[in-house]
Amino acid sequence: MAAEQEKDRRDFLADGLRVAGVIAAGTLGGFLAGRRGYASESRWQIDPDKCVACGNCATYCVLDESAVKCVQCFDMCGYCNRCTGYYTLDGLDSRDTAAEDLLCPTEAVIRTFVEGKAGQNFYEYTIDTEACIGCAMCVKGCALMNGSLYLQVMHDRCVNCNECAIAVACPSEAFVQVPSGKPYRMKQAIVGVIEQKASKSPAARELIEQVQTDE
Image (cartoon, rainbow, N blue to C red; front, side):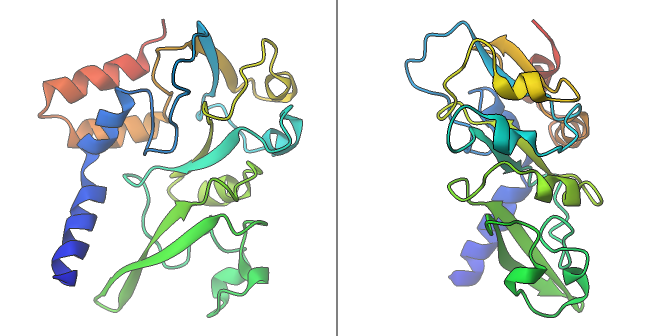
């Protein structure tokens, strides 16, 4: 029974259409739930292709705890044993998971064993959004590999300032205002991965086009 549950879980994570499906609701991976009843005509979000992981999101938000959090795109993740978004460069050579070997200062990146085969272990990396401070250290580290970790604005936390302090401080102008009903922007690399998996689904193709088109 446990083996069957694990297989079902891996099949779920590998299904690209699940990502396309949540895009339709303006969310990503279940972490980006919008505020119910929110009547604003526009909202802030991050263009992940412009983001340079400068760290300003953690310190410039008007909230005590930044509304910007890291998110994980499982469709791009390599489930690596030695993940540069999880370990410091020194920690990559370590056999332990001591705090000093971890890249995230708040241990918000959770590492879970998935499976081992042919002498290689695979791990899933998820984000504890309550612990994440939006510092982008894991994003910068992950960029050395698959780039599946990136930052996004959590709309259930964001107060939607007319002039966002993070947007003003952003060196790459990655913060943008979009219509409130528009889905989150994704990395073009992520769109490419989902396109391949959703190529046989006209509905999924329509969702991808909705994400790519600026209103």
